[in-house]
Length: 301
Figure 1 (cartoon, rainbow, N blue to C red):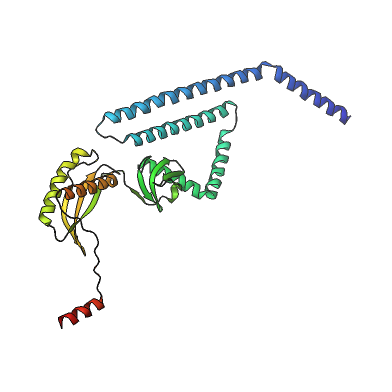
Figure 2 (figure 1 turned 90 degrees about the vertical axis):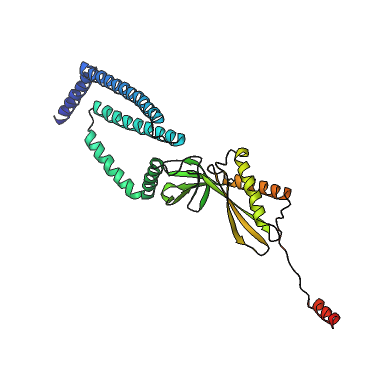
């Protein structure tokens, strides 16, 4: 008797399943769900496209405004904002699609929040790197192409990411630094650089004449070198060496051009001093011999 009842119950469930699958209710719900998904996707793509245009127009208006930012920072921020908009729209669309399938989104979000909290405790360094990366980008601490010194590394920035940044030294090594380790940064590319050149003059030369020759030369240099922003300044006598008088020259240059301009100034000064017959001294050593001193004393006696 119980077996007959079980078979009857199974047949009843099978008939209900077949009727549900072949009935209009299921296909109507599927069609409505598909239409909702298509509508959500179309709205998402439209919002992203309009958002990109609005963001591009916003940065274009800022370019014509009184408050301007560098082109590299503008490109970085623009790309970052567009990506953030895209991720937010995709996330909202995903939640709405789940609701279209009558899933419990609240329980899903609660589970995701707990899982995210557990992952956050287990990956604190990763979270710290990501947060530091956002602050590096938004505060414009450095950008791609800048010459920086940080965490014992010095070189040109090749890439600024959300988690890491890449710094290439002048000898070719690429250093990959987690953003969380970038605690102190020296950026050499934000403001103009200063070239510092020390020129040695022999004690036997006329210092006033040497200063006049150098001053005349300094007035000619800005026309020869575009990276030199102003006439170099002769500060005067810097130190009195063992065999020379050292005079210091400083020059304002474009960012990261101070090394090249310092070499150019040394070359120009050396050439001009040679033309005027002013000697740049070389190290001198005086040898003293006791035997020669004794021979000299005997001759005097």
